Image 1 (cartoon, rainbow, N blue to C red):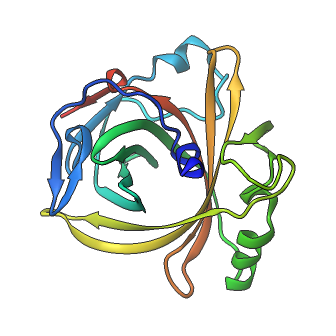
Image 2 (image 1 turned 180 degrees about the horizontal axis):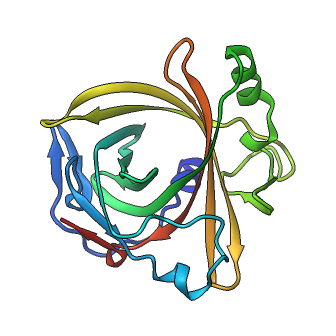
Length: 223
């Protein structure tokens, strides 16, 4: 499962608030649909312009939750925020392993299904060892057994979306994703680029570019 660890970016996480639940799905950190989340954005003021994109400030509502079952006890929990961003919490066996937050930077709409499939199977943004995007060079995080220079196929997984109050299953989509990163020397940390081809129906597909950072529980205020 090394590819999975690199996809979700596992790292130690301190003690977390009590879990909530959605049916039989345990939700981490007290997060849920209808919660309010405030992310500490101090780093953007420390080095203005050093990051490709900024996470939203202030308290953000959570109108949508996405659950991704990666198998072997691994799950991704995505809490979509009001302002085109999402908080991603990876868990294993119910324990929090890593927290990242992403803001959507760009969305591309392939003209037809064939173009979408070509992007998934051929485009370097979904598998090359390095890519150029938003005036930066990004290195692939996801590993490979084929050698560092080989393009690897994207990681495919399904996401179930929940909305409304009380929450109910609202949509399903398939992701073909690749995670990249780059160092930000001004802040002595990495910035991440998540490239995802999303398929949610016969004529409903797109490619999203989301930029994000690692977080800890101390960076979050959840009510």
